[in-house]
Image (cartoon, rainbow over all chains, first blue to last red; front, side, top):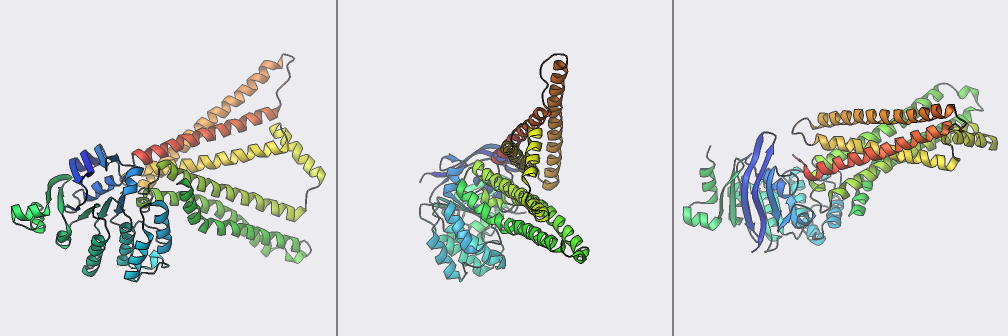
Length: 232
Length: 271
């Protein structure tokens, strides 16, 4: 598989505080990758850099060999860790908006997923519960046929039943040759779906490995290894 | 993509601005109607008249304040706050994003000015009826004196100045907000600070430029005083002032646009 994401000497500082420090990372396509680390480790900063919401202080970042720009935004589907849609809009209006701007957006897929969850397309986002809003956002993101899905904390703050739904939605709606990068600190919930993991600590990559390798070589689950590496 | 961005920008902003402008026109029509009726009924003057004056003044003030404040808040929310996550992950260029917001904002500001002008015209016509040909003649003469040209070209200059002013104001506010987003904390106070700095610089440059125009005009008059050369008419000075103001508005708008573009493209800082 070709390289989908590459960081070279990538750093990001907020004033005097360094959030990411000289990261070198290569991610090949066609895998589900967990970007794992405790709060404040730099996961969200890396994800924002991938999506062009922050600019690097140093280094370069390419997606599918393109620098961050229009070409990369056409192939990256991003789920932020917060609500980012206009709360006064109806679901149907947002679907139309996505369809207008993203050539890879599959409208039918979105309406199918909404119907399965019993979410009415004519409802306004502001009338929905927090969990339902998150589901709508996930449906929009997974309705794109993107090359790279970047999901920032998709299961944080939702109940276990909703977590199962979210993980099933992710698994059943991505193309096999696409890559999914999931950031979370809730390892045990997603461990079973991951192919590879990236451990990030204090702005630096401390481990990149396949999940099978961790189990075979270290004889541990990803969750156990995470607790060991990030022990307070 | 600019067309699509504009479509959504207008769709979202029209929800507030169409009713707002319509309300001002409605107040104008009601007051004009009342004025016509009260001309025949002296007892009708008084409390209702004061009520309409207050309502009208509040309506006009609200039109401009709400338009300006809403446009600034919307720009900040959709560019540098939560909704910026969607704006900046769309596969569109920074130029297209900025242009759509600027075009929409300027057109809403111009609509507010047009509605205000129309409202004054409706009130004036309502009170005194259609102007006589002698009035129109005097009006044309006044414009000739001011601009040194006919009525229509003069109106063209005024329209250009209003458009230039709307661009300059919009771009100054947007550039200030773009500077504000660079800060980790206190982004809004930082944006206000940037706005104050921009405004002061703008005022100094404008004052110096207009001073130079005035000096140039007076210098010419002094030089030609002792000769038999014809004196420049005052309209020439006014025209130079208007053209200088228009040129400055254009230059400042370009400078603010460049600031917005560079900061959004190279220094975006969504937290």
